[in-house]
Length: 284
Ligand SMILES: [Zn+2]
View 1: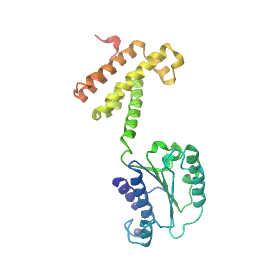
View 2: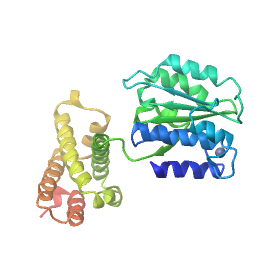
View 3: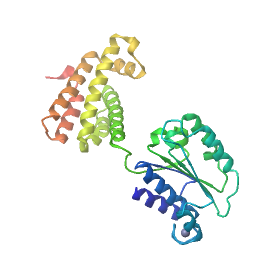
View 4: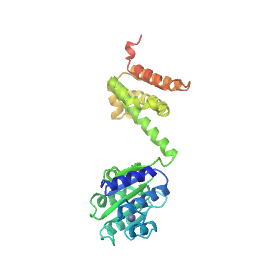
């Protein structure tokens, strides 16, 4: 999380720090520590912030600064309550005690349900000039887009490997959709662009091939059972034949198999793309 703090302090020093920031990743303790350092720096009266020696820094370090207000959810979903957000809004309408700003630290924001986030929205969007927000969240994916569009996100390392795995699976699914759509529209240049990311990430490559196989199978099924279709599947079915889909499915499965032999991922990716761009009707 050190680089997150460094980035925040740099932005503050350059007068570029947004009035609302969100810190994600790392552990809850690391996020809170980073948030407290951020608050201390925002209120610091010294030259290089936080100086650590001014009256404001001393109080902040002792967690007794009257203009740093800490609110937190608990550990369960929904434990950061709408009532707490109302309290934040009420406090934000009162001038700071002694500093230029009043800093609100909101910890464990991942425990806010949409109702609480919506209640927070307006005050984050148009806070009084003296209010600053520092939100901490295990992952920004827990926050509504409307909140995210109003804060600057600083990302530390992924909170847990489980989170990272989820993220990778989601990325693989999204890539599989992009690949299928791209080959259905026969845009070879775009296919190479979109898959370039797989060169360096063998894990993601394997997950993407697996996702492509299952997505293609789903599309095939939907071509005979329209009740299982959706806009995406309809689009693909309208562009390519069942023969094409079977061909893509075969390539995806074979590529996954080949990866088990630990062969050169780069070479495999090239073959994968070249095969996907070959029309099965024109194969020798
Ligand atoms: Zn200071």
